[in-house]
Image 1 (spheres, one colour):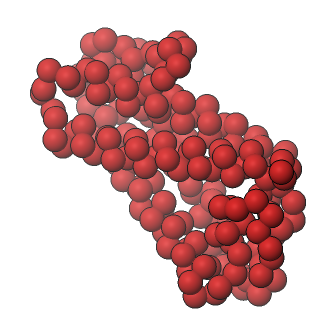
Image 2: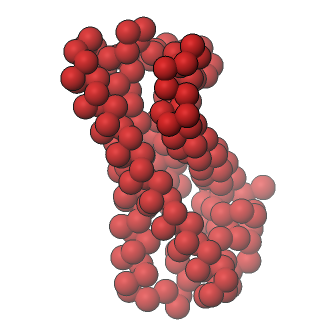
Amino acid sequence: MQLRNTNTVWGLPARALHLLGAVAMLILLGHGWWMTHMVPGTAGRLANYSWHAALGYDLLALTILRLLWRWWGGVPALPPDTQRWERVAAYVGHVMLYLFTFATTLVGWALAGTMRTPLTKDLFGLSWPLVYVSQDHAIHATLEDGHKILAYVLAVIIAVHVAGVLRHYFIKRNNVLTRMLRPAAAPA
């Protein structure tokens, strides 16, 4: 079992954090869209917002762990035939993924303090301190709109990321995808 990242493969912690983060993001994006477009004004609205915020807090913690592991463990090299523009695109894409993940979750965290009932618990029941508290409806609306816009941009960035990975797998036929999915995927 490979724990540390190497120059050719991702270690188990990196793969697990990637999978958990990806699942959490997809759930949050889907649930956020459903919650704001399909159930506004219903009796279960607070429960939906509470659950969404709870998973958002856990995604924020997971993303911090993932970034720390990435800095500590290194990153496998791209395949040798990767062109310069592809290296730049991969770097910019990953920076954008982290930037918009943090921006979306941090704005959501600020939004949690503008609810009539502030949202402070994660999925494990741990309390998160509020980073911003206000009952001003205009500020709530601004944060809510900002959170939605950031989430939509993040969804586009994720789609581009997935398209890039699929390009590596189906067109370039290298191991960029398989080394994240399987331990010790052989280099292409």
